[in-house]
Length: 532
Ligand code: COA
Image 1 (cartoon, rainbow, N blue to C red):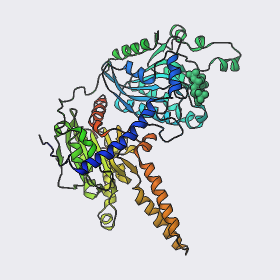
Image 2 (image 1 turned 90 degrees about the horizontal axis):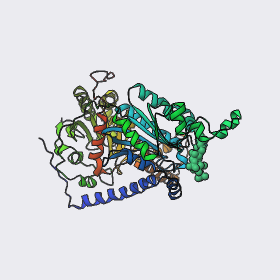
Image 3 (image 1 turned 30 degrees about the horizontal axis):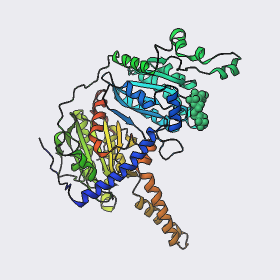
């Protein structure tokens, strides 16, 4: 064992201050989460209950094995937009009859559970996770379909929801639909395209057009039950495989369906796992409020990996990027963590080599972000920083082992890409409340804009308005700062959630367990041309 040492002074002023700053940020994130769990608010929740219905999260709770965790994904979707936080749908990973499943549940208390552009993005992300990790998909359906005022944003791309269901099925990944209420028009294709369908008596409404639309179209008189009730679909159309007497009965039957899937994980048994040697609570006091000050990522690694046991790779070479091998909840991982913010040529080459090694050995990779990007300047350009950064980005792009990314601090510029940012398809990406991500830091960006404006004025022979420049810089800085914050980025689905640093090991453990449902196989070749 190579147990990491710690230099963290948990009695010192620096730790206390960092911890206080992190806790303040966590309070903000906590209130945004509370907004999401409140759904449509008191009035709509009360109405829903009065109708004898369960809330979306209560349905999930009854579906899951007792006392097992639910890893909720994208809970802050739509934050900062015109739509309610959470985007009228709950998604996440939970265990049903011992099987890790991807669960989605419409929240009918939010605008009738209708899907807006953010609900669509969130649902598509959930499908992507189900597909990549081979997780059975369970849809708990009760939705007003498309959010009609925003139909132009969702009608055409929304077709992907139904496409995904049948592609999952074609890939042998089970899909289960449980219909609790409205599932009309396009929504009818959720049960329509699912492998297994359960409908709740006198509640499910599954039709292409409701009674008013049918009357308009053909003049026929009809009613909800005969057009699309559970009983009709179970006895007559055959769309429902199982007829449930009420909501708990539907969830019980969904559990029976999963129990009979004969679903087996590709890698079922992780090695026994010892907890880290240091307290996870201390993860609160590591990241500085001002991200310009560096911090040692080994302090983080020591608090998330099994037994704090970490074998560092090339510790003396490219020291601004820490790389090495560990286990997390028994699963092997290769870790790449930014140590001093900047990525130089040596760090980039070391990363490319490390990623290739992980691929040869079929070991998932964990990227811990705190980078301001690749180094700029004459010396570095002449030293080939572009081609070395490209080498790292090539390795990340074509690597086939699963990647996990955690944004701890800064994640700026192409450094975000090289460290497996969102566009590089990490299986999961989470941010700490201390994270910031943008093309560059707010001050730097405002400064660059100002220099460009100054040069432009000089070229035209015009005087430069220093006062206006100061105002502009302050405004731009503030704008970029707010756009770099994790809640803003999470609202746009650029991560899978903002997590409490203390939960990092648990969250990553749940992800590692879920992703081992699919075979973990590295790329044995298939990289692009490495520009040496
Ligand atoms: N788009 C936008 N807003 C919608 C909506 C939709 N598809 N469906 C419902 N809403 C809104 C309602 O206008 C209402 O808003 P308000 O409370 O501010 O007035 C709120 O959501 C709740 O709807 P309400 O009808 O009171 O809820 P309900 O639980 O009694 O009924 C539905 C829910 C979904 C059955 C019903 O709203 C409905 O039939 N909606 C239209 C469904 C439809 O035709 N969708 C198009 C399919 S592509």
